[in-house]
Amino acid sequence: MKKPIPKKKGRPVNPNLVPTVSVSIRLTEELLEKLDKISSDEGRSRTKQIEIIVKQFVEKYKS
Image (cartoon, rainbow, N blue to C red; front, side, top):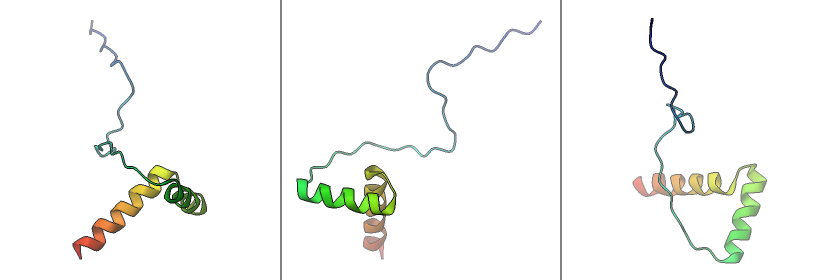
């Protein structure tokens, strides 16, 4: 008789996820409000909008 495979504890891991790191930034309240307006207009979360802005900046810097 086969032994049952023990279940892994914790959250399931999505193999398609890219490892990320956490970053903290300080923004003025005015800049944060503008960022929130842009992200709501684009239909994205604040975090996703920041990620897109950083990606665009890095791509522009590379060229």
